[in-house]
Amino acid sequence: MTDHPGNARHGSSQAPTMVWTGRATNRFQWLLAAAGAGCLALGIELAVDSAWTNGIAPLLMSVIGCLAAGLLILFGTLAFVHVAVKVDGDALEVRCGHIGLPRRRILLTHVVGADFAPQVTPRQWGGWGYRWRPEQGTAVVVRRGEALVLRLGDGRTFTVTVDDAEAAVRFIRDRLHLPAPTRKSAGPSST
Image (cartoon, rainbow, N blue to C red):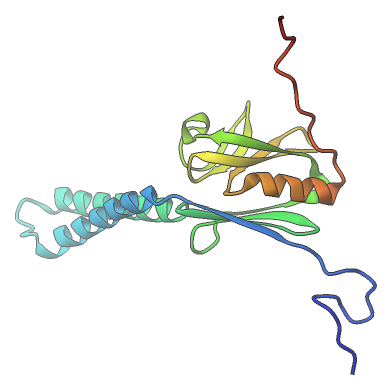
């Protein structure tokens, strides 16, 4: 019996594919999720324990408002508590939250460049979450800090905050056979 190394397929001359994975987490989002759960609980409390003596319309509006706000806050924040990034030989895949939605998959054949951004903040993108700005492109921002910035063939960019983004940039550049960025000097020195 022959032992086949790693993930190589039987009869394949290809070496096993390498995969880079990374994550980023924002623990502050749990506080917002707790606020959403509080709104949801208040809506349920109003529906169950109210006397209904002041009329049905105001109470119904309060209950529906609390439930809707609670669900929006709860699911909106839980979707962006963390992000998982996976880069394999074919594509970059970004999954948000515990159920992996929203999800974005970018084929590496559509990528023309990969850059490291040492400091990305939610303020630059207008908040946390899945963001789009006409002058900047698209981003998944779950926390402040380092990020991976992809330049796509259609002129757009995609940014994702992820731990060890510099390693992701090196991995993608190796896959695409892109040269490493040249270091710019601080300018002419005066002596």
